[in-house]
Image 1 (cartoon, rainbow, N blue to C red):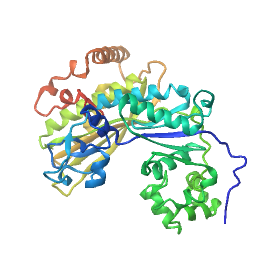
Image 2 (cartoon, rainbow, N blue to C red; image 1 turned 90 degrees about the horizontal axis):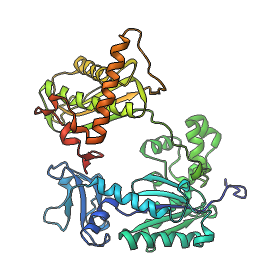
Image 3 (cartoon, helix red, strand yellow; image 1 turned 60 degrees about the vertical axis):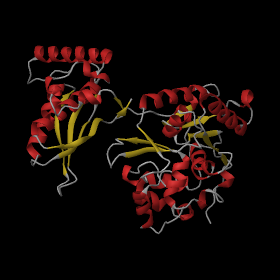
Image 4 (tube, rainbow, N blue to C red; image 1 turned 30 degrees about the vertical axis):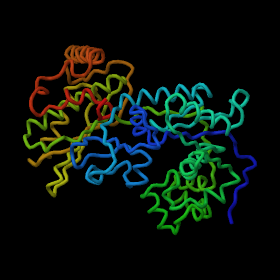
Length: 424
């Protein structure tokens, strides 16, 4: 049996904190209902049968089996469930309040926000002020509930991996909502995680690849030849082996936040678009927004990618193509490229989904002129786009839109009030 010697492994006091059913819990509190007693589902497009569940309160999950990703038609009629539309701006505001509470216990650099409802805290330096690791966890739990009435689950570990595994596999299921996993617990707890997809970092595709090697459990992964795993799956294979032994050398205060590899936008249309002009209006609007994001980050794109999804009522699923261009952040050029791709591959089918992504990103420090363009026109065009960006930033995106956005097919004005694609 392969067992690790943890004598020289770094040990820190890490908390992985999850706000239970965050969106649904916030909505419960707003209605003066305890989050664990409510029957609330937060749903995008609740007026449609295909409306998507973004969050469900614990009781809804337990009694009805409804969870994130469920659809409107799956919710039983005449049930106790109350369906509400998302309020993303509210959730972001509450998230900021939670992060402010975290900063009462640790320095800002010792916080890693993993998602809007989950964060990692390194409390190694906080013991003199707040006590043991478990005491700190309880104090954070109490403070968040006292001020915001939200229930949290907390995993504690010697590193971020063990803290996350403790959260997902034990803390969320026990009465105290706190669980502690140390290196010494690996053989008893980590190796018994089942199925293997419950292991952090192992999704369906990775699990399928591991099954082909005869690895169907975390224990078998821990006993496999690490050199063979690295040869077959590269660095990821080696990392999975060490994760199966509970080893993770990540230091939260040294976290690296990479620059974006691409800028994109996608949307599912509220109806099938059949008129080509209407489809192109939406493409123009989306390309306009992506170009503005590029300029905001002082970036240029060298590749524009357009994906079109057809209506689910037809067999043809759509198309996805990209085109290289001279590095740019110009609205005009990105729109022209998107339309060129669209007109080349469009087959006159009803469109339901549109996605635009700009890749091959370069962060520029100064204006780059194209030898094949009039330099003065290029500078004037960029200045005009920056003026438009500043007006939109101050007064909102819909303060300046193309006239085509006022036509029947336009979606930019309606979407300008959304946060993360949902109602603010």
